[in-house]
Image (cartoon, rainbow over all chains, first blue to last red; front, side, top):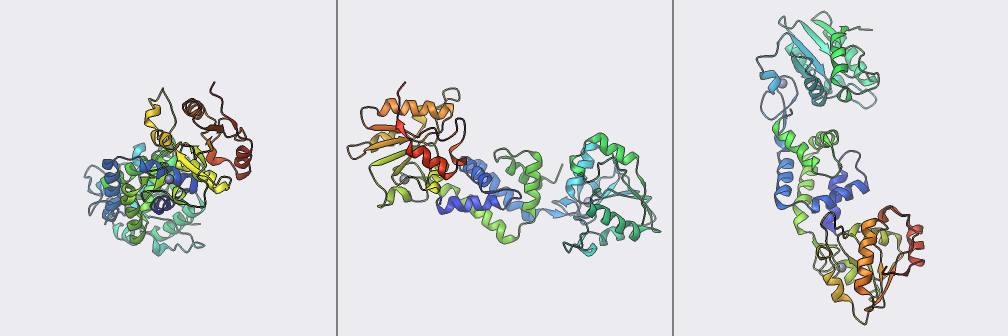
Length: 197
Length: 197
Ligand SMILES: [Zn+2]
Ligand SMILES: [Zn+2]
């Protein structure tokens, strides 16, 4: 109904999650009002997407070979905290409750959706486990998929290293990146030995 | 906190209206999963923004010199319907209740925000008024700004042409592009002579 190029712009915004027709239209009208400089900046940001990688060691988002956390000599090498996503890593960092290293799975096991352990960043995790590691802390979310993944990793790592799980300070069914710093701290403090059944 | 290029991507999405940090993050993670083709398509859509113009005659969105409505010989030249935005024009078109020509103001008068009549697409409207025009229909929204603008245009056009105003079928304070077709039709049917006081 609108001119083709404007319809294209709307279609582009509709590719974003949860964005329907009305919202995409609103975004497109806003974009139309961007000045030349803003437009170029947004374009450049999109062009750089292909230059965003994952850290060779931990799987976190990274624009170099290794991420800032893996490179940081002030963080202890003896603890590895396993998270589902860079977003969850960021939530823990913002709370400032952990000073070890991370490992980012980039997903959770979900058989129904066909997400198998082999689809997650687990191979490199196994390679990281050695006598230098005192403890692996499972910080997957307390959702069905998160719990499934935690159980799988517990079985996989048991006997090789001490495995703990964040305490249920995080409300069941809730999401890690919506929890406040105190809740996250409580969860770290109350962490328990992971159960394999 | 994230790598710079990913932060840039988040910043780009935050330029969209009503998009806060959480939503921008969600969009950025989705964009990261776009395949090469999708990314190119979105980039192209943004690059084409500068090629979207306004119609020389009516001010509607257009990627040529004149818009499809101004060029359409099947629409009557004797009626002009004045709308605030291309979005509102589209709402009326979707309802299929009007078959004349349009004029798009691209805004409303708002003294507090410094939007003066001279900032709107009014000059070309005056040029369009001649003995061939039977009626000008004001379809600005029933909001404070919309009413202010309608009053201004009524005073400006009175004596030159018959000026009518869409009936209050549209709920006061509501928005034209959220109204259903029947409400819009009712508003067209019940249109009344515009009052200058
Ligand atoms: Zn890393
Ligand atoms: Zn036109």
